[in-house]
Length: 388
Image (cartoon, rainbow, N blue to C red; front, side, top):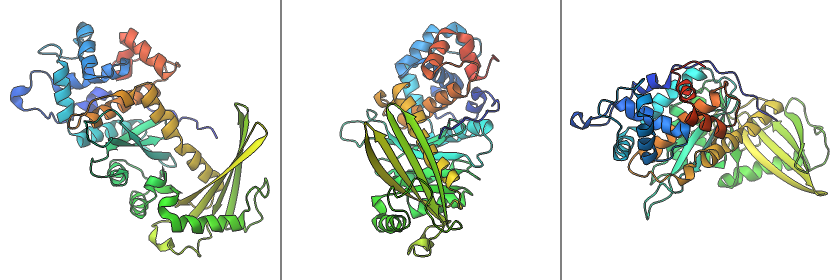
């Protein structure tokens, strides 16, 4: 099932959103304008910069160009200045700024699949520390990062998800999470945010998994038929897709059931309305492999819509995490002082959104970044300062 991106309205320039951020520095240390530091950092990320030193290099090489829309009262900040500012910047305020800007692009998330997933920052750690994780929200149809939060060092992704949910306007959205987020408190939090959920059910809820698995095995024997089972149509729905490519055929069969009177924990999952199962049958080189996955959901009976949510969730891996690792080389970033890792993660996601939402250049992301490095007018266009 392919996901078609929605057309995006023109947001206000990102520089205007930066203007509301509180400057973390003391007055006596403000040799450079706060907005200048943020904009140079963003420009560096857009054209391929990966470090604070790259921010300084970009500023020095494009100083005359930057003076066209920035004040630069004391010239270009040093890499140490960039480091200090991004380390001190309040990441929650930066997230709020990020969220307000994204809200201008996609003000309505009704029926949007919002995939939430964690990603490691593998080199942004000091010796003896645990690998930091960033939990991101991805709007699948719009193809945009909605925001992210860093997992506290002595915590885990479960505690970070509610923080992220609170920062997003999710009314009408379908929030998807893998087994990490399949928690009663998170389900309750999503319902409180006036959204629906589709949660992957795995071994962290072993009893519930065995109950749901037994229910579907009884109702639908594995590979028993290529069409919907003869179940009560008012309690069970079916949908199927077939994908061909790369020498394989993959059939995905989706069942959704609202028959859960037998489920002992039904009252503990707020908003629970249905169970879902996906059976993937992959045929390659004359051999079949079969996998079944199970879900808890607040969605009413509609297997096609359930399938759309399940397939949409993988967008956070393919279209966000992959791009951040391969195009932005996020895994190689070594920023680790105080809030630097989280704030640079926000900066990269802002840059990714600016590149993805631009429709004037039909090139791939890597090509767009190369164009931004070569063409100052295209870079101004990405910032929202110059119309195409």
